[in-house]
Structure formats: structure tokens, C-alpha cells
Length: 154
Image 1: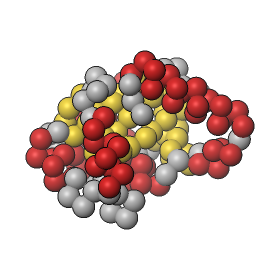
Image 2: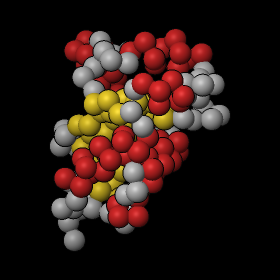
Image 3: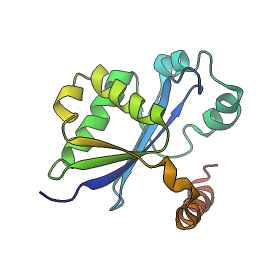
Image 4: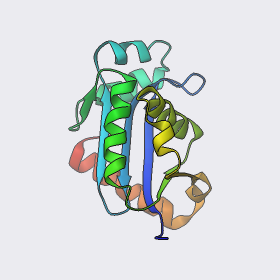
């Protein structure tokens, strides 16, 4: 069996205590990317109870980077599922650092009716323990600097 392909997952969500999905980004170790933002009434609904940080820092950045727009969690789930299905020739190791990211991925795929089809090829890989590694910290800083410089994302 081939080695799993690492797929790095990060979500923006409304608050730490009651996370409602706002956007989802995924990138493979080979550089293939997907970024989807909720829009319209779905975004407005998800922002109910949003933290001050989300309202002041995250939300103003929406629309500054080319993104697919989804009008519902189910539509977002279909977009993510289509992207993941293009990668299914190998097992997929979904790397995340905060449990809500993986929960929100599952929730979106369930809303799209596709979770049962994909859950057997997605290996959830919690990687938060790596955050203390110097090489990981350096890579994160390079990525943040590139995002800030090239995409104007803070």
C-alpha cells in the first residue's frame, strides 16, 4: 500500500467555545490547494456569537484571497469532497492542529452526504505536538511571512 499523502487542514470558525465554520483551507504536501469561504446568509448565520477576534481580525480578511464561495455548509462539503476525491488514488492523512478543524471537516462532509464514502480513506492526524519543534516554527514563520507579503493575509 502506498504511503498516505499529507493533506494539511485549517478552518476559520466563529469562536472557540461554539465553533461554527466560516472557511476551510487544505493543502497537500505537494502544494495542491483548496480554500473555500462561506458567503451570504450561511456566513451571516455562522457569525452569530462570533468572538471579538473573529470579527476584528478574521472577517476583514474574507475576500482578500481568491476563494471559492459556498452558500451553505453542504455546498462547502461538496466542494471539499470533490477536491479530496481527486486525491483518492492514495490514502489521505488529514493533518490538523486543533480538534475543531477535523470536526468541522466531518460536519461539512456529513452535510453533503459524503462522509460515509470518504471517512475510510481519511486518516485523521493530530499534529499540534509538532508546534514546539524549531524546524516547524521556522516553516510556520516562513509561511506566515509569505502569506502576509504575497497575499496580504495576516
